[in-house]
Image 1: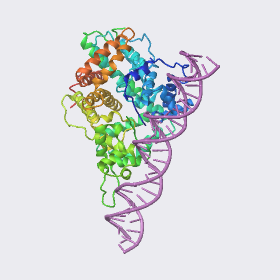
Image 2: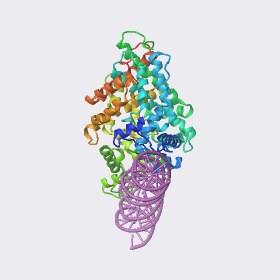
Image 3: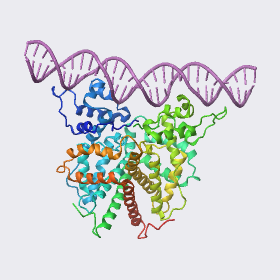
Image 4: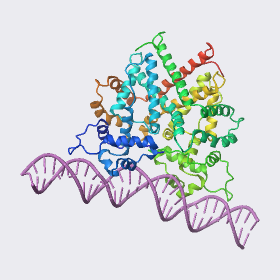
Length: 262
Length: 262
DNA sequence: CCCCCTTCTCGTATGATGTACGGTACGGCG
DNA sequence: CGCCGTACCGTACATCATACGAGAAGGGGG
């Protein structure tokens, strides 16, 4: 598996690409476009993972020479940036969500969760210094709206959103794995478990590691059987929102925070 | 930046390497050892990041031919596995921590946070299907101990630990960036901000994105000035633990959960 | 209409990468 | 003493991103 990210240089070029502010194509608009390239790249990544995403693969899929891509895109890093911003644009953003701030945050969490399931490679890309494209900013704007006017400072609003989305990132991991196991030929989650189990038994000594042995076995068997990741996601989300609720209650008297703001 | 992980094949070989169960060296024990290789690799990754970690670099640092490494280590993926398990062994695990389960969880969170700061490359490696080495399991055992006997089911114990460690992973990201900015020559966080700011202003229209413009600017200025990531980490941690406390209170009556459990 | 010049297209070359393969040298055991 | 397993390593290959410069193609000015 391979993950790269941009930061090569010239933020102007990068941002111009993301926002499509370009004098653009005096000739005829060009047969190839950034959009087609990005779509092809996303298809490759969705199908075969980030490791399989190479400039050659993308060019082949478009029936085009490899270097042609570089006319429209500065490099692979920038292409990945645009891919990111593009899929961020896919998130559903309903205007009205029942349940106050709590319902809105839960909806945001589930939407992000679904996004990771749709594009598993998102888990691989380092979102440090994210691409400041239009879709990312629109998404950020929307998510901030969920906690606007409920009594948090600006920095707290940012912190809560970061907290929730960060949690989703972590929770999506096992879920994506489970989902991929069913469709992938390589090695099912069960196969992996069964392949490692005999060696683990020899090594996971209940005397040295009583808790790990007990809990690990329980969790292992549970995960092997049912689609637990989704339940685990909801469990953690509930804890998280409870924590936010405590903050709001401490802040603004005894008003039931789940109803405030709407 | 490049991140890879193992899963090549033969879990037996992988686990044997992690647990060092090997007939080993009929000759004389060999001048080179897995330990020396792993230490060198960690040094390279610490110093120059995961992208700079190549088999050639590691071999050069040891004054050894590249291919020599392959006599001790099946491949780069497995080497990364051992690196992971090795640094997991570095975590401090005091037997007694004041403050009950809450103090113990906070201690675990801070310890993990420090680990990420010590080895920033940890953020880059995909910990799906983690290396089941002795240190990882010992760490897991210790962390489970923090929530043992406070009224959670086995699955909930696992879920809470996953929740906390996952949160730390997310919170460590900006902290690591800030720390690296001070020591890295390439581009300071401030430089990056200042390089992007003019284009952002043009693009971050307060009419279209009022919240993002306001909060983003506030957060940007704040992050630029002070070492906020650490404070943000503590903020989120408090929320998280509050959420867990709510769960415990709902579960076991009205006992003040922060005091329960030794 | 023709020419030039901007822009699109892409083949080749370069310097990385991980690692398969085949060879060398040496130490302990028969 | 002889043999063989093991540590060692040089070379070779496939794959990667991408710098460079040459070819093609279409539109605007003479």
